[in-house]
Image 1 (cartoon, each protein chain N blue to C red):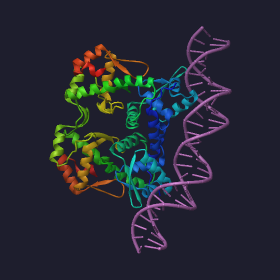
Image 2 (image 1 turned 180 degrees about the vertical axis):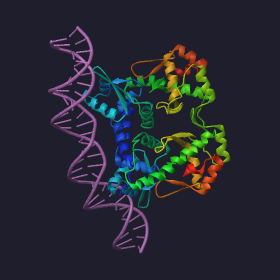
Image 3 (image 1 turned 30 degrees about the horizontal axis):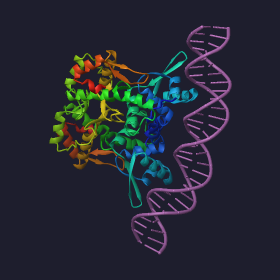
Image 4 (image 1 turned 135 degrees about the vertical axis):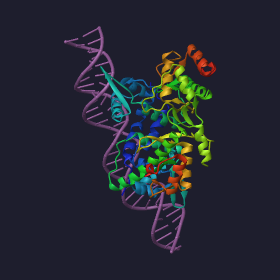
Length: 234
Length: 234
DNA sequence: CGGACGCTTCGGCGCTCACCGAAGTGTCCC
DNA sequence: GGGACACTTCGGTGAGCGCCGAAGCGTCCG
């Protein structure tokens, strides 16, 4: 009788991997794009190491994470940019009224709101400011979709930021920011820009989380290249 | 101890709504964009009416569906385009090796592969053909992201297809096709094009599912307006 | 008015699964 | 070699939840 969609079982199984709060905590933590050890995640999530070990095995088996064993450590990270995008999309659309509960969270939260990485690109007010500047200068087009313009392509070239145009990953993609609730630049261009910013010292990571801070050199560069006022970055 | 992300609980709760196969079957069925009654969905999913009633209540409470009571019927549909996009994204990235099991499914599957609606826009080979034609004529830009060009905006105007540019919904957005595994046009422009195609009789729905067929008039129009060869639509 | 019908509520059943601690395995380092 | 350490495996416990059928409630229609 049932004309069930063959995709349903897979969809449910996949969603079930995210449908546990402990695993959700891990996935959100891993959105910083780094590799975490099993122990770090266990402490972060507040569960026993044995419990977390099983969670990681499931997430790896489900293709959400990849693992790398080094001696007695088990490092895990998000499997790829598509998984990161999916988790970020889900998180952004969910719980819009999520507020920090503790002072420490509030402190970390405001640093995160200023600037952070979102898997492999810039987010927070910093990400928005860059995206808006690109748009305002006609390098990025948001009014009819989300794509770099020809001028935008040239801008990346003259700024010395290489774009790998092989592969299926889109050059530019919108990622919805969960603090600002506005789109910012992701995709190949977003990742390249973020990497360039960290490599050349425009930004540095602060703390152990994924928050980033713009340096003095970064302020100068962003002002010169994109006309971003330093006030917007503080 | 735990520095848990406040979004984790919400994320897990949300994913849990999709993490049940029966609910997943419903969500995939509702991707046709129409309103279904509780009874239709119960038969479709192959469970008791009482079971499905509780599932619907959860999905409505979770914001995935909206309901409308008419007499003794309870109509439900996907809450909005964002939810539809999320479900479609999840389904597209999951179970790439989903194959039909029965002859009937295979028959329905091939009609669906030719052309169908995906919530409110065209998908299947038809959707791909239209998207490729738009891209080939310089109306849509996919190489640097996904956005209409100025020529594309004009094309919609001269074709008499109105685009509502108020609201936050993006004008053009890529939706990954689960049969062709290639992007096709979604967003405001995709929805407007699909509505126009159905309104003017370029396409008609076949069967009770979301499959659509191109009419003779549709073949002429698509050939004239976009240079699409009729063979690609069969 | 009364029966058919669509949906909902309720009680009960059984399965899944997240959790822990204890014991075990492999790695690192003194 | 031996102890500290990171992780895994295993058994047991408890909670949550998906399922059904029976009973109840409202709607429709003859």
